[in-house]
Image (cartoon, rainbow, N blue to C red; front, top):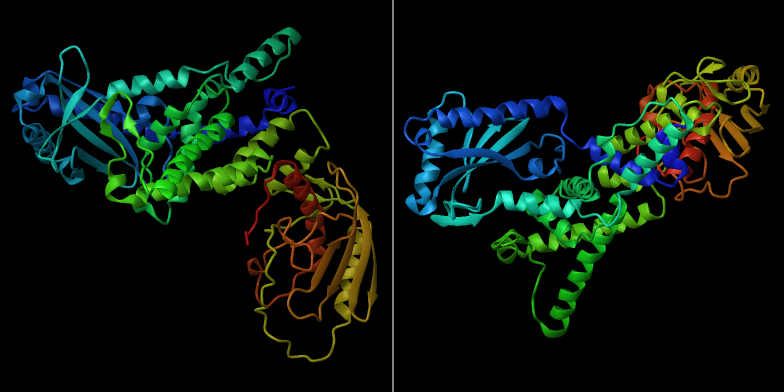
Length: 544
């Protein structure tokens, strides 16, 4: 028994799925190394400045998600931003705010490498590595010699404003560590190691660091990912990462799992929102959730929510949407993870779980599914999925829902084709004897029973194939499963016939070889049972 099998047997598969999804959002090694190199170069560039920075004592350090372990890989062409603080160890009142800011901009403008990458912002200098990442460099001076609280320049205010990056990082990390009991996956990992040592089993052990990250950090990573998806088409009012991170940490009460953390925090946010809504409806008093810097209350992370209420309204809409989808996940419908965190990513994670679950096993549903997903698939005469025996299955993508209009040209021959059905009958009978077929008036009809290895149930199949029919030539039905109804499961047509392929994937003016569809019936059944078990349609598909 490997660790994945242990997790599944003890009811931790959902938690493992969430942890794997969060881990997959981490920055890849190559980007991290490029970013680290760019980060390290900043100190050297500033220290070489003969005018100002070489004459003051300063230190450079990261702030934000990189410093607290909640980095999230950006979507599409979005860039990851690394926030950097240049802390000058001198009192802010010895300088004007514009003086500090202008010195920083001057250094980068005078450097041939950084000049084309420089974008002056309100409080910081942005160094943009286009299409990859950017560095936001914030200069600041200390307020008290023994503390790291800073005053930073604000060009819009033409003055200083306070912030406390190191204090915030310490606060968040302390909140993340404050777990009521050992985190579920960490405990499962420790128990599995103990069990493996007791049984003297030789299994590949999982990466310890993978399961050691605290639930709060993972919850923030996943929430930021759904935030990115939710605001794809309305980026202007996208809730900032600092707001989401802070509010999750403030509402966190030491939950030991990623799942419980997200579930409970969403409930608490919406409960607060409901209180404010009641106040507005009953007394006409407008209030909103305010998110202040917990280590510097003078800093309101949501100050622009007063100027533009749409920021607040969109935050609540996001939270409600997240909660609505999360309720489906609570019921074991893992398919909603595709909507929350991305379809391709979710399928990849589930496939990895299936691979671990299948180690050392044969003839399982998971094994059959993995063979289908490999692309190198055959179906034998009994309808079983194999790696090298039987009829070679061709590539396909499941579709369904809307019957596509035929784009094939009308036949120039008006007489009925009686020959095609007999040819297809011969091919089907030779390769798939589990089907009993007959030809009637140019139409191939067939019935049979099939139970691909790994499936729990034997299915009764009805097939119809008529080359003379306009549009889709085949109709394939499952006769003994009442759950297979259009609108209730994926990839059916509205007459409850199976969708085995996407018509647009094939040549417009050529009819499909019907016998090539028969292996796809076995594959559909295996993927259907996996869908019932995990909630995700794992094979290639065109959603409708």
